[in-house]
Length: 217
Image (cartoon, rainbow, N blue to C red):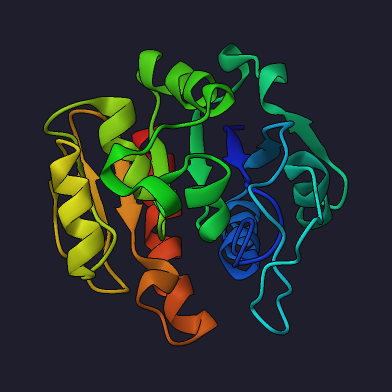
């Protein structure tokens, strides 16, 4: 049975992992009959957002691993616990946490840096030649992790696509139900809620991404 790692960035679209994208990923993996294990970096969130008002809660602090455990129902490990030999592939749901906690793209754009814990975690899959799926905004990390010419999509947003290109990546426009595959580097990406207007639309691309990642694995 294939074993897939899922990297989470907290819990909640505005400051962590997008919950619908994360759950759809886990559901599709389960329906495909494969085993998965959730991971998250054991670091502090960039900030905490009140998801009812959309406002930052001043002075509030939360831990990315502890928050991500809400989605994983407690079955989650810190990124440093990865044994790369036990996993066949990795999938990374989106949500602003991917651009705030896994990297700092949300504040630095094309000058962003990927968190050290995340660089090591994703880099282990990259260096082992194992496929990685990037969903929603998480593909902004692709150029930083894979270097010049790495292919991916964030959908159709011109500003984010321009930043992707400025970092050395090769951006491809894609609709919500499409995936972009970098066969050479075994990277798969899909826009999901960068474009989706409903959970059903988000699922259309995520389903294709999960199955392509499994095929590459």
